[in-house]
Length: 604
Image 1 (tube, one colour):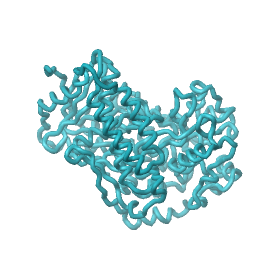
Image 2: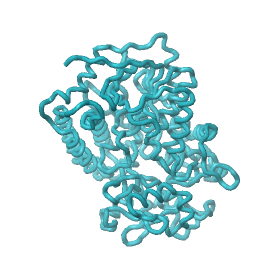
Image 3: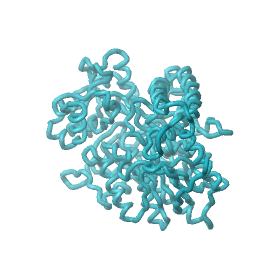
Image 4: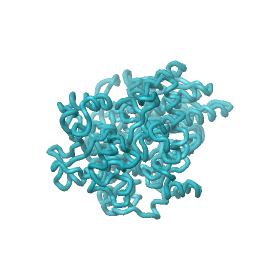
């Protein structure tokens, strides 16, 4: 095959991904004087951050003066079942308020209380109401603000451009190979530092809230470049996704519905979360409906939170039990009812997107009738192992922020922490990347033969006279992951999944596409499958290695948590071209923070 020409661009810092984390990193790197380029797979503004509806978690203490970074830190560590990197959790809790106020200074229009302060709503796992929000469109407002700031600052954006390979100069990062989706032509980005902000890989599952871009690209790129991944067994299944009609199954229903008082009911009309609540947490949550209602309607200091606001892993498992035991709805979910708890005016004001979403997609008026919901693949707690201070990976010059980075959330993410995560660590990744680039005396070099090899590999599917259908492989993968690597897992199921993933990879090597390269969905799917299969294998191998149930990782053959394994992290890496795992000790917090986690904050 004749090697074609390609475009070349050069930047000090290349940011891959234009969601909240990528934009915040780009803004910071630009502010540090670096030349910054942002590559996004879709159009600018079409980021998954937009799908985050409920709010951004930060201890602003506008609703409850008792709130502070210590309480937020404690909630995050407890929610993550203790395997979080305590250093990231502390930085996150301490710096989130400043990042939220900063966003306001850039133009974000937060909802307000009557006294003019930022309004904050309750969310699952948070001791106090601490989610700053804009109705149920918080992510959209954040992206609007960050996008405007980045464009105003002069950040260069490359839209509809997919990165398929990272390059190194020796042991350090040197650039990336990508292609324009509209033309299929290749482009080389040379860079002193690269920030991955590509999000997760939920499109490997059949039922997911994730959009088409979420194919695990950053995880696969980093792994191939030699970076370590951590916590990959912990995949969050959000308790409330739409279950009907089939065309929108998995579409997110914000936790803000439950934060505003929505209750979960089975087909018998029973509020089952009271029954599902573990005994260890009954002192923190309402004992009956009357107490829960008093909390919802403002008496939050004297009463305990409703059980619907328990952590997402617990609520998802409770819903799964109701359906499995025959108490689910006709479409295989449960009911989420806000209509009987709040007025139509309140619902339309606080949950406008949910009102329109159900009206338009399901023909349901949520001010009058309940929604049908069920668990949906939503978020990767696991990702690239990074330094807590700089967000640099184990590969020099390669940084990561947002969902593609691991460590902060541990075994289970609290709602709202993802948005403050991308602000806090997006800023730190941009700063770290700019400082790294500034220290280099000369830009790294990219071997032309490596670029040509990457181009040839990407075009091979066009050369096959016959072969596998990429869409058939994708469909089988999604069903496989849903069945074998879903909410509940077993050794036999995970081993069967790994065996079938190996066979799917063999089939991908025989994949064939036809037509031209311009906007070719078959070719795009072929290239996405490389990332999807790698990420799926990583999740399955990490899940097989953790022989206990913890947070979002449930092993039916090991239903209890193991204190010994709770002090170990599963790390995934490449060894001679194969995915391998090892265990490392969980970083031990200092005594004062350990006491705070175990004993709680006075008055909280």
